[in-house]
Image (cartoon, rainbow, N blue to C red; front, side, top):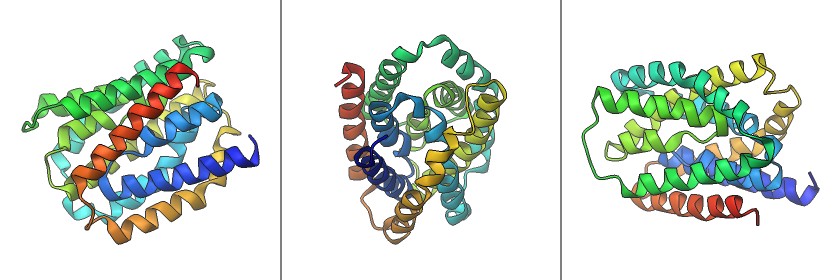
Length: 236
């Protein structure tokens, strides 16, 4: 990766960490398509690893608003679906990973934009957890199903619950990826190198998370996801 590409990735990570730290979602939707364009080999380990410190911070910062019941059901379903996500990753040829990630990103963004308001129950929690386990393990993108469940809940509840669910799921996915040879130690290097960018975005979100218009931020994230996902699918 050239110095210019690394700079683009660093800025993308910082912006994504700020957006997710502020709104509760958006990191993978922003970073995965850009990383896939720059170097498909970064997926999904780079995205999963980069999100761990971010979600640990957000979960701690918003711990008082955590939906314990919803998180429990989501995590259980998420862990159960993780092996299926790994199987999907094995089935996707490397040359098609960009197309798959782009398609998953676009579909997730469209679903998030189109979903009507509803009150989540056990079935919604389990469904969101299962889909997240499948897509996040295979591509690094898993936020939209959780966003659909919590999009009409208080912002602090969304941020804290999504962060906890992500954190547990990311660790589980990475353990399985490395145990089966789909992840390599070298893949962690890029996430470590760009940790300052992640930290900068997370720190800035601390100053703004209670001031931002959550609806407008969410729409901006999903709009970016649509564009970048289409670019990744078209191989531009």
